[in-house]
Length: 289
Image (cartoon, rainbow, N blue to C red; front, top):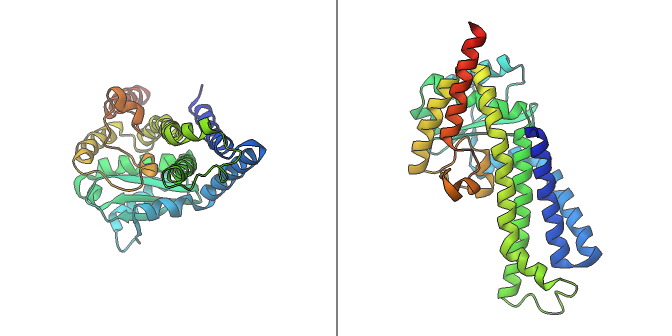
């Protein structure tokens, strides 16, 4: 199964989980209709507002060519090479080293980097990171990830509200008429967990493609491999704290890829990503020579 089919199946599973949560909690046809409505609204909202949400979550600030000439020119050069409109450029006021892209399509996209990543990466490695984010834009991963984050957030919010009603007496017999008691319990305990697993699986299916796209765009897979290793080391010491639902947008996360950690990681392990990039380097060298 291709990455695109995997992503579509996972998004469908996430929306289906939201509908199921509403059905089990509210009960009957009304719950089903409300669930379908919630899934439609959250997907539509994500489509048009995904870039604004992500940028606001990380407090990203827009920059012009005069404010960050080196970064701006790099994004412009790589965008021209990729034959896409230049995205808006943002800087996140954080010494954590990370980056992300957002937007529903190449015509409505943004690339954001932290102050930290500008300080620690040499030019060729930063170029690999920017090319990775531009590939996410080209593949429309930015929209997919934003939709996943919003739907997962809606599921968690619904479960949280149910939990509050149970703890603080809002969930009386009358107010919960028609709800399935087992469904309520499963919603509170399992739905947010399941939504997170699905969301992170969606993110992991897209990272290898973005790495490969960066390698082809720059012709320098090893530079991105070095950047990922450097970013992982710094991210563990200083994670970029924000809403966890949006962590899959970042180029690197700070969760271990070993054992159960891989289940909760929004990215494949850095070690595996580096291995894939070095294989690509050999393939590109064979093609050239």
